[in-house]
Amino acid sequence: MKSSIIKLAFFLAILLGVVGQAHGVRIKDIADIKGVRENQLVGYGLVVGLNGTGDSDDAIFTIQSFASMLERMGVTVRPEDIEVDNVAAVMVITDLPAFARTGSRIDVLVSSIGDAENLQGGTLMFTPLKGADGQVYAIAQGPVSTGGFVVGTESGSGVQKNHPTAGRVVNGAIIEKEILTNFNKKQSLTLNLHRADFTTASRVAQAINIAFYDQIARTQDAGTIEVQVPEKYKGNTVAMVTMIERLGVTPDMVSKVVINERTGTVIMGQNVRVSTIAIAHGNLSIEIKEDQNVSQPMPFARRGRTVVTPESQVLVQEGNNPIFLVESGVSIGELVKALNALGVSPRDLISIFQALKVAGALQADLEIM
Image (tube, rainbow, N blue to C red; front, side, top):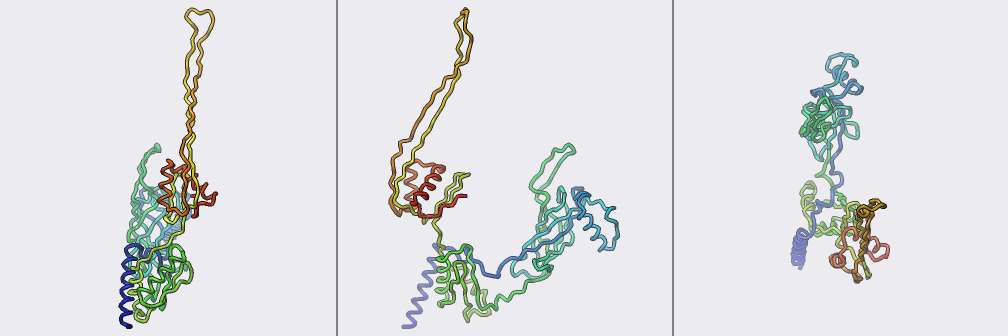
């Protein structure tokens, strides 16, 4: 009897997994694991080798930084004797990936902070990259690729492509310090939903419990699911996460109508419902056409003068659209058909939805961008 129950549970788990994969989305796409994230790094450096497009002498911090760099290399020079046309001060930023190891290379983004005109052809000098704790986690250095150019003349005319004062150093940073983690030794995992929802969180916990044949997952709130690591996966948490990420879940959505009045865009969710209401929409168009006529006196007339007289024509048309009755609880598809039957344009649709919300007939949130 017990073996039959286990087989039945196994069959239901497989069936639910197949249905979830066919109609839902992976947990991997709607949730993150707490603690598994990137860390931002930032540094201050110099780009050298520019063809006269670097910072001007007004950038005092560039001159001071260049003098300090030369002094560390054993060259003593007065800052007032330095011209920095070929040097630019830059900020260097990057993201340290989760589980990054010492010796790995990552890209860095270089952005000018002075009055440099172009970083094309420059080389980023030795730049330490620090985290929020002030410690150095990577060292950046290498040629800067801007993906653009600036060509100009002395008269002021020229051509510019892309943004030449920001660029990227591909594989320009070497990781010098790791962020230590004992992921495989964790006793529990916390899943954070990208969009908090009580129903979605419950579905995620249910899918995990069915897949592992145990109540290892429970919801803490609308956006957090706590998962205990089973005994068979202790020391091999990666395999457990791999299995969880592949599970299919159908996220629940809030009924919402989003309106962008600037572009006339209307987006409606599938759960939007409308109470019983009658809708009438009529268009009033007024067309005014004005011509200019010339009035002249008869030939050889002793009196009279030539004048210009306006002639106006006014045409008023009003639509004869009927009143359309919308039954309670209709779906979004039926509502769209009803509005199309009235000849409603996207701009008119915005006014109709606003009126439906005021009337209390729209069973959804109305958000205006």
